[in-house]
Image 1 (cartoon, rainbow, N blue to C red):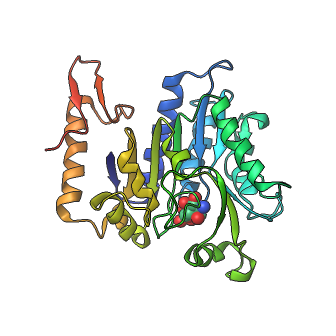
Image 2 (cartoon, helix red, strand yellow; image 1 turned 180 degrees about the horizontal axis):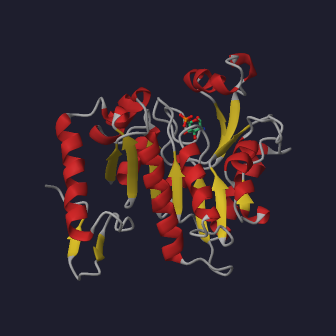
Length: 292
Ligand code: GLP
């Protein structure tokens, strides 16, 4: 797993948006071979989406052959409610780019049979050959999608009861009124995320510093579901300096030094060299996961 640390939220957003652009363009998707992207909601990805829209406007990125799967959706909130994840995704990304509406998958929290809806979602992911890159954010309690503490790390898409801490955290989107926050959601499982060929997680802000430390410095633990990324062959976390506040200085220096060596070998722009052994243009082969 790699940890990239940037100064602030804007730099984190820029790094990740650039990373996604490079991955999609490198993949060179076609109608027959689309790029399948997993996406989150929340405040964390807003900067990334803004930058992706910018790339699209500049003609540097197209979503014409991109299929997206969102992580989650509230149960019982009208699809056109301003705080539904449907509204969020269309407002922040989809309506500004050339994605085909039929290529956008978001769980339907108003489906008559919610269990069936979840099964259909997993089947739809399988039908398109799985997810190439899953972008995620986390809650301050280390949850990924709506996989609250204690969720099985082998979980799949399902109905979840939200933790009180999440309801509180999300009340800011509902006039600060916790009674307006839906208490149930549909969410992809931890295993659904980890099945993606690549997982990229945004972690910014001092309020997520404990979660980052738990995720990086402690073991895989269902109480911090994002820690499952330790088991992923191609996991990347991008955080700002504030989120590193609870990490050991040694941990921060270690990951910064890895990035430094990486840059000195291949230059900062080759963002796609991530995880595993890859052959470089210069014919140099390095292992980015090797211990110091
Ligand atoms: C919700 C979403 C998560 C998201 C989290 C963090 O709980 N279900 O997918 O990661 O919020 O939100 P924010 O990025 O606003 O901190």
